[in-house]
Image (tube, rainbow, N blue to C red; front, side, top):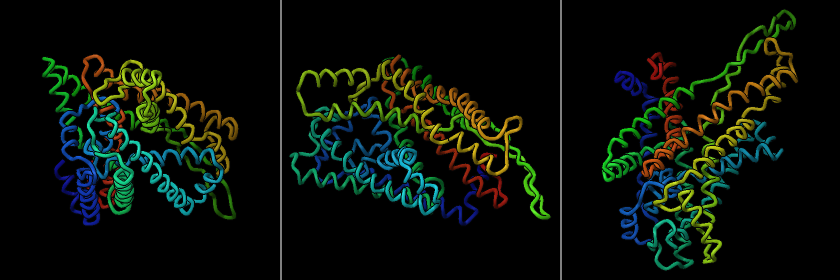
Length: 438
């Protein structure tokens, strides 16, 4: 194993990319520790000492790499960019103009990427304003005033600083993608989640020891490792649909006659359904907590969300949260898989290139065949995603332990690690070095 890592640094080009990526990680983590101007830093430190791992706040803080609890320049992290990317993908399916741009190739994708950046800045402005108000009224902090006097000038400085921090993080991610190793945006989320694992497991250990049953901590760690193994196993699973191309004679040349296959992954949608489902459950809590009203019906809704969805910093999600999250993940898995793989379009492409599925007629029957297989393999994939997402929550509910590492965080960490290692392995293989995964 050590020789493999030594080979990674023997190739000058690969070594330069890895060191550049690590340097960008250091810049990102440094920015996550810098608080925005105009806040009470002593109040921030006091809040950090009182912060718990569970609840909606714990999940948001996990994806920002702890930057949210410090109210830092990078408090929003890369999530506004991820959200805008998802929105643009959905709009591409709905709006013909965006679909035409995507079909144009590299030039069209550049235009869509530019619009995604603009949407990221808009979302960052909205989210930074919302977080500033939520911290001010004590929704996240339990009454600690982080911004002092809630004046327009002070709030504007904080909002502009956090928005600029999000734009800088977006630039860092694109820079890693261009000059580093792997997908920059995914790697930044990977680093954010990994940086919080020591705190998460340390707090879990403290809670189990305080309850007098440290065996539960060992069970949670074993569950964590088993989930990693299961994710790796399912991520590699795929259904290969054979495709045969007929021979064609053009002049003196014989073309075609080759065999290939379409690899349909069991988990075609990846972690996107879990992100969608989590965002849907977070959205009502964010809205209701931002409404400055003392009306009874508003307070009643807030209490229900707080008790059942974990809306406070110490709140533990209930069984309602588990049921809703599991159902939404299955729904969004089918929804996003239908967006990613269109059986009709795929069947037309196969027929246009002179190919066919053995035993199935080209055209309509091929489309039905592909749709049937896709629906069958999507069901176990969606159930698997749902179980991975809710198992840590179920463990926390049964033993009353705030668990901040969710199934989506484990899925992201394992998925990004596998994809990055595959890229490094391909570069080592091109240079006749032994790969990491082989």
